[in-house]
Length: 150
Image 1 (cartoon, rainbow, N blue to C red):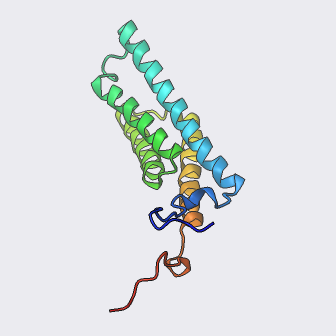
Image 2: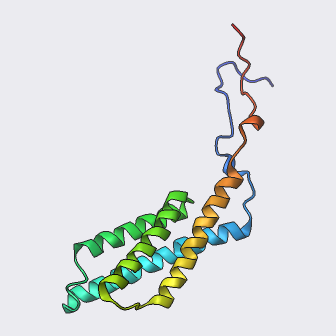
Image 3: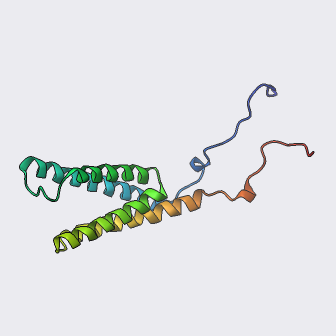
C-alpha cells in the first residue's frame, strides 16, 4: 500500500537512542550526577543543622542556600549529559574548596573534596566523550527530499 500524499514526512529526530554508548562513559556520567546529589544533600544538611543550632552562623547564610540550588541544578545538568554542567560543577567545586581553605586557613575535608573532584572530573570527561560519540558528521547526513535545481 502506498503512502498518502497528505501524510507528513517522517524522520528519526532522536538519533542518540540508536547509537550504542559504551558502559564506561555512562558510568562516569552517572557517578558524577550521583556525587553532585550527595554533595548537595550534605551541604543542605549542614546548612539546616547550622541554622537550627545557631552554630557557625558566620559561615552559613543565604548564599549557602543558593549554593545548594546551584549544586542540584548542575547535578540535573550532568544527568542530562550537559558538558557545561559537568565542567562548571568541577570548576565551581574546586574554586569553592580553595576559597574555604583560604578563608579558614586550614585544609579541612581535603580527602572528601578530592573524592568529589575525582567524580566531577570523570563526569566532565564522560560528557565530552558522550557528545563526541553522538556527533554525526555532516557528510554522512543524507538529504530527506529532492529539491529541484533552479
